[in-house]
Length: 627
Image (cartoon, rainbow, N blue to C red):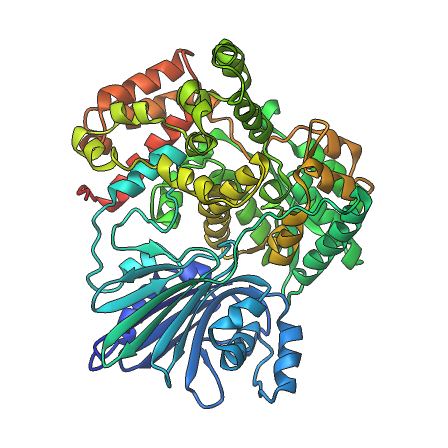
């Protein structure tokens, strides 16, 4: 795992300074504390920070081919690189290291931009082809590894994190009102946006090529892989279980390759427990497992993690997260570079820090909920969708029932609106603040900027363009394209990289995902059981308590803390007249949100956490202009 950065200036007479590249890589030293490297060739330059995982002594970057005409900086792991290496050697390629990085270089020489179609792994990389005067960048299938960039008429700047891009000279820092609206709607910034207008994200499963012809850039974005649900109804449940078991085992085994100590996160849920069970098939040594818990019993899953640890004789480690952990907020803000309000970033940070004391690589169960339909919101939303086809009078009589059975974050949008189209339901799905609330929250000038194109439309567009046939598949696809990449994977990457820990996600092997796309929805949600096919496949490998336990996730007891031990902290930060939020939001409405939560009128802990995050982010960045 590493941190990468680089610059390409379109003026061939421009000379990149190594000092400029060093300023960029210094911002991401936490991603690679073991080594650094630079490549400068007139108007192009690469910077690199390394966390040594494979080929510890010869994995230095930037790395080139035999004649120095193709250079690469690469962040991630390629799990099928040994197989690809053998194939390339048979075609006459000569290797000087045993690293997966060099495999990509020769793969590019052999297949050009199609090289990404041969990779199994997590990756973000940039290649400079000196013969063609072209830079070629790529991001993995699901966006496990980050890639940010700034593209103007004069230059292209990229980096593993926003802070690396901003460290280059004169990158503008105006805030993007669309990104702010996305943050308040979903608690994270979606799509290719960042909080800064001038910085974008390369989308998952995309490549970016910039060729220079007499100083004029030719820019090309290409999608090389896509999420496509195509259920195969011809196979039996047993046949699906057998093939799924084979691919799960293969993916986990591939991702256990490492030249440094390796372990696993173990929450006690189905996904992380499955990963540990599968790891046990491929090692005779005790697996090092790491769990985080809370004193509040309703949020604590440690007993389920212990059951898995006992079953497989793991070397198990536990840690309790306390309310004082909110003191971590300023560090989190610095790590994410933009407002990010998934509060599970805190326990994810702590389990990463805890694990790093013992291992350098950890496997996690992220992606299982999206691939195998694990979110309890799916059946609830599916029921609402079905009501769309009932007569209007019947529909209206169901309002009260629906308000009782689905989260307020969904019902708050107005049931008639949700029932009108499933794409609108998707647009509102999991939003923290609905449009009416955001209109009250924002300063009038901000609302004017976003009201014509509110953040919900992004998810509506995904659903409208989806080729998935049934409602459950469309919801899974929606989450893979939004929540998984821009929340879950972003959280895991930043929290682990803050601690120089590499986290791998074997459930997001794209070959395994392609299999899951073919499994019919009736086997993912069956007889009221979410993730049915995954549980059925591994039912003999997991304790009964884990199989039957209702999913909790990695949520924190913020609602309780904000009414109790953190009440004074919240009021100090959000209720004072001198709050940094005052330039962007209506402080009277903010105080009402806090009051309603403290008095029990409604649960607003997500909203309060989002406001605390933005307040802390504004304090660190001192940015006030919105465009």
